Each structure stands twice: as structure tokens, then as C-alpha cells.
Amino acid sequence: MAKPMEEYKWHELNVGCVIEEVGNAREYKTGDWRSFKPVWNNEKCIKCGLCWLYCPDATVFKTNEGFYLSNLDYCKGCGICAKECKPGAIKMVEEGR
Ligand code: SF4
Ligand code: SF4
Image (tube, rainbow, N blue to C red):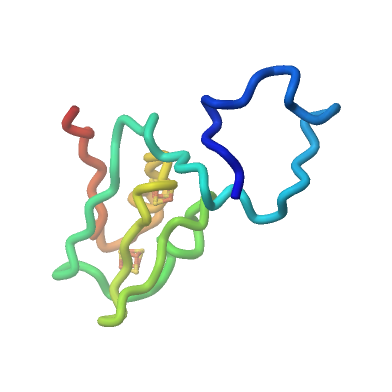
């Protein structure tokens, strides 16, 4: 397991910042600088899957009921899912911090 990013010192990084531990991106949550997040309204959703298809971060996943949600640990809040959703089932709302 890789250690938390803030514990790395510059001289510990590999030349060229080569990552030797395959799959360690899973340990780093990259959604915490997001300012907007998508909120789904399943009453409007027609289960077309376009939000899943267009999400550039592959954070959208299908629920057991066949609807969709985003894993907010990695969602960047870009709003592409909401833009591509033709029935308007996704609304971007400001993060409450
Ligand atoms: S794009 Fe909109 S309608 Fe299609 S699955 Fe996603 S939320 Fe539902
Ligand atoms: S806001 Fe962007 S990153 Fe987040 S789920 Fe929608 S398309 Fe993916």
C-alpha cells in the first residue's frame, strides 16, 4: 500500500515520477477539490446510461435498481453528465462546505 501523498518527500519520488505500484490510484481520492456535484432525480431518469458513457472520470456506476450514481470520492464536478442527460435527470448543485 502506498503511503498518503502528504507524507512523501521530494527526494523519495522516482525519477520521472514513475509509479511502480500498479493500481494505487484507487488509494487517492481525487474528488475533494470539486465545487459542484451531480444529484440524480430517478423520477426523470429513463436509464439510457449516457451519464455513465460520457463521464470522463468513469465515476458513474449503475445501481442495483438500474439507475445511476457517481462515486463522489473521484467525481470532479465537471457537469458533463448533467449536460448529456436529455431528460434533465441530473442537476449540478454547489458543494456545501
Ligand atoms: S443520462 Fe440521465 S436519463 Fe440517462 S441514465 Fe443518466 S440520469 Fe438517467
Ligand atoms: S460531474 Fe463529471 S466527473 Fe462527476 S459524474 Fe458527472 S461527468 Fe463524471
